Image (cartoon, rainbow, N blue to C red; front, top):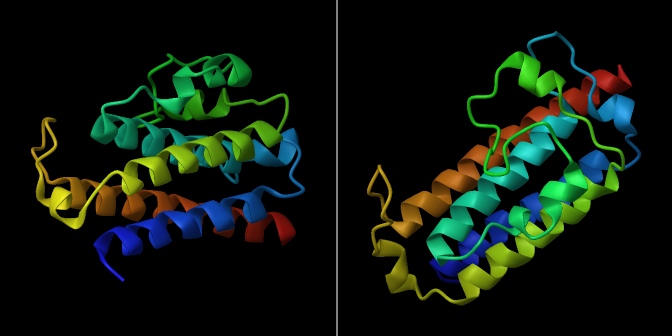
Length: 165
């Protein structure tokens, strides 16, 4: 197993777990917040997908998957390039989806783009610097993405537990 395989496995675990956490939730449960300033499951799932999508697209030099019809499918009151980073509580409360399946479908499309990007990398590419304000390597960026999205996935798991009581 090389570094690319480890990254593929890390992203794959999110792709396996997220649909399970979203299964059976309707719009009301997806948007439930334990407190008015807390994130909802739906918003967190969207944020996970958007963060992975935007950062992987930047590494790959490709268009965000979100720009390929997903902006219209979600029809959210956010800018087309927003990822949720820095959203205020009122922006989180504004999150609504007509069809909860759109979250699972969008993340599946993002995950496919992530795998395509990983398939195009060799281990030596992980040391290449990403041209962004932080000047980090591709490897560091990918580990940071996994760290961020798995933290949010854990938050979704916690919220699911609160819903069950």
